[in-house]
Length: 493
Ligand code: ACM
Ligand code: ZN
Image 1 (cartoon, rainbow, N blue to C red):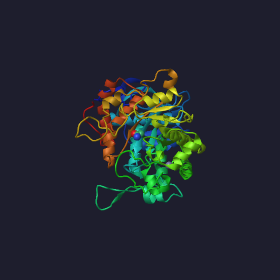
Image 2: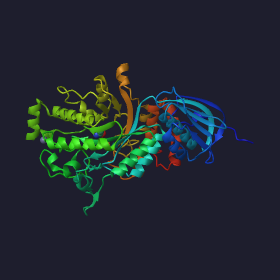
Image 3: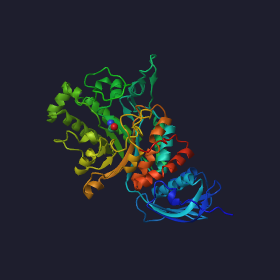
Image 4: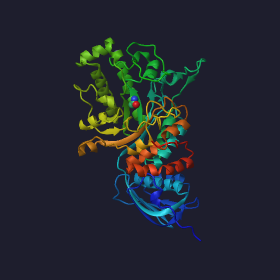
């Protein structure tokens, strides 16, 4: 006798689709079934069979183009004999394929029949990986991008420089490879070093892999602070002229880019031009966080710059730097993003109009930026978006600096505290940030990211009552098992 359905599709899907109608029966998914993709979806023709681990050549799964869906929207109908995905464009069709693929894992390949109409709540649904403190291999980054895309995430923020290592190659700057990419491991007495640059080929490969999953890549280089590695390579970029070290300690360092040195601006212009050529997506993140101004206070060049520009405070000098760097990003054809410190010292110069503000020190910066007319990405460290923080306040638990419990993530609302409709509309979305000071391998990174990143993905795709989200966490463990991801399975609060 045929087995009857015991579980409904609506109980197996995470993120929850916008609308889902459960139906009788199921579709048995196996590697002998076939897929036909609309010829206009040229990249999906390649990727869909590989992602689902099936072949082209028949219409067990049919992916069709149809006008009229919202951005990234799709419909997915699972019948006993056929699965049909419809979308206006390739992005929507890819999200439909991801939902289907996700369901194969949670249903053990026995897909309950259903009819789904789906589209996202927020446009910016991302994750940041710090590849300076820990160098993550391209293969590992691809693994993360793949699972993130399964949860409809669409932004990979690639943190490529910091005090402890520079990771992006630039033509004409050989010291980046020789000096800035490596640090001495102070825990050892034998002088061993750690770190390397990504090659351009690796960057292009990761980028192509992300694009095949309809994920935009956002490169970040830190300016004007968090630059010890850059200063170690090019000491004349610092106010004192050095010498400087690529740091193997964690924290905030007083040595920053000299704002009075035109050679610094020339380097940044060249770096941004080269980064803009290497990365094809619309954004470049310029950092801006945690930049002490002590070196500027006693630097004749910085003081002269302040005088020339009519600036009375060092905070304004940082704002001047932000404006200069944003103009370089614009000139290179891209849109700048900065951490919320970019809002400070802007009394006289204001903020470049198209600068997107990433709110990390709580939500106040994001609220202010939105009120000032800027688009905002909310990733407050106070509300669950920092995945380097511990899952629980337990000294045996991994992580540092704070706690981001799964419950906090399940309750996170990127629009909390924003009053008017216009201000709310400027919040593009959110992302989870993984800083890697205390992370020494990919397995640890997985433990910190999952399932928190999946929970955040539901908040951004189609937020549910937190209890409903938390009840379905076992679905996430199931996908982690299927994809060989080492995830956290401890207390939720
Ligand atoms: C940050 O966490 N320093 C942006
Ligand atoms: Zn200076």
